Length: 126
Image (tube, rainbow, N blue to C red; front, side, top):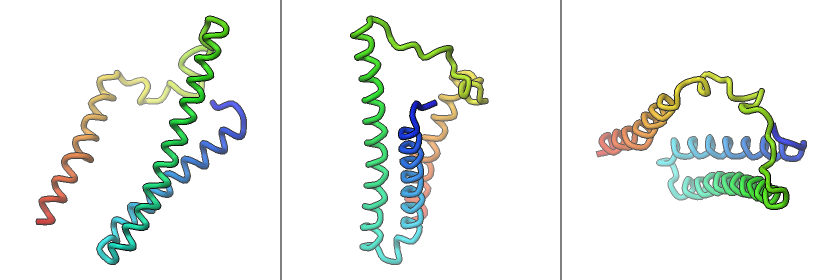
């Protein structure tokens, strides 16, 4: 759905970079106890790459929103994005479910990953 090959390749490369850095970080965390100082250096690299990817995504969003706002100021109209949802998106099972189900799944995910799993790990490390 992106215009231009450069943006497509940049977006794909950023996704691969961030996913690769995350997987690398998980492997480092799994082997952390073997050499903590070296693991900390590797985690710094992984977190830096993930942060760089997030920063780039934010910049791209800022650029696109800014372009749309400038077009609005010039013409008085927001750019036309065509019929919504886009033909390539908007018809997945996630899109067809009521919003309350999506929020429930999100809340459960947060409760498990951010609360239950860390609490379990703290309990087993004692």
